Image (cartoon, rainbow, N blue to C red; front, side, top):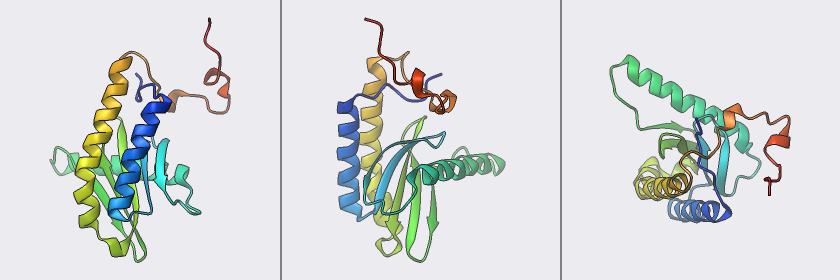
Length: 160
């Protein structure tokens, strides 16, 4: 089953605009859209020397672990996770069934601001991903099933 819709350049542009607005409003360092397998879809902000690929994979794993913990304590769902550090903090929340919003922000910013602006941001991101999904409901990608060591299947010309 495809976990991501087929995203066109215009789709990515809309997602990036939403993320950039969010980063500006929250003073976040970087905001990422990742799929629940941990694959980075797009990001906005100043990542500096952060390894966004690894960060996305680990944050996804931590988020999914929290979902399992929710089940163990008879909670239907934990809607987000947050990690607080002395200099930087992380916030992860659901966008939809397949994607997460991951935010890296200075700890001085405060989690309240990040959570407050995430509500409208997540709604916009979910809407844009749903529009892309509706364009081709049977199409899309499951990044976890792709052989990234052999990208030939990903980057091939369509038969005319």
